[in-house]
Length: 215
Ligand SMILES: C[S@@+](CC[C@H](N)C(=O)[O-])C[C@H]1O[C@@H](n2cnc3c(N)ncnc32)[C@H](O)[C@@H]1O
Image (cartoon, rainbow, N blue to C red):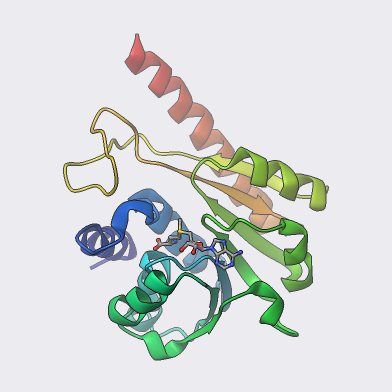
């Protein structure tokens, strides 16, 4: 099984679990795994673990590829905390905090934001020189905040041409496209700039195809 199939299979698993309404999209899981694989990400912070679809997918990816990834996450909701124990196969591998302020002296290669409702200024303390931030879904306000916080960043909206499937989570409508995400390279290396350009081009073409399909 390749990494993309791993993400899709795990997404399907989470669609069948209690509390699936707010999980990350299939495309978000695929994108996160691709980023981790491309940029050799070792340390991850996820703000708002929810019921664990992203975290469990990443830990499965790391096990399959024999990689040692440090996964730190925040979650404070009682229901989610109980579900995380059930849903994350390698639950003992995550470092879990109820609030971001409790995490001390750690920097992360990748920060994933999915539904976090606190000030994003706090994340500056957790970024290393070339941290990548992934915001799940279409959260314009959070994206704009990050662009102000990191004025040298490069940003791309990543989208897919796939539509929701019958198995998709939440109030899915099979006429709607699967949700995407925002990728922010706070201080991109040359390789990150190339990747960013590739993604920008892909999004441009996909948007044109979406418009063409609507005609
Ligand atoms: C959309 S859900 C995350 C879903 C998760 N990515 C998944 O796929 O299962 C957002 C989560 O963030 C948590 N959250 C929001 N703001 C938070 C905060 N300030 N501190 C800790 N957790 C927070 C909520 O409790 C909720 O479970």
